[in-house]
Image (cartoon, rainbow, N blue to C red; front, side, top):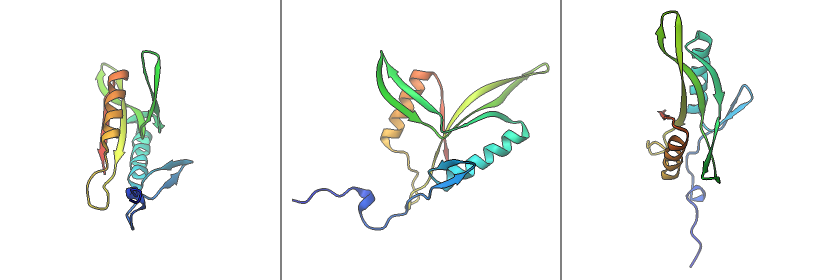
Length: 129
């Protein structure tokens, strides 16, 4: 019997086109568009401290399980008390549609997000494009 052929090698399939902007390489045009939106929000003062491709380490009881790389991290205005704004850190991961119109969010990706959320006490927002 022949070896199983990985899906990415079977016939012609639509693959995301890598895009480079401001020295960052984005995995898809959707991610690059989101970067443009966030840069505009940062200029307008709605968000601050934009980080592209932040990495969160996954470490349980001293055992290194690797890391998860998200698309963006930034602080957003949350609440104003008096003259002072309170900022909250947000994490985002952009998911694109495949050639059949379904969003690409694999079970492994979902698992890594759940582990990162549990270990770091954060919420990862999935942005569908």
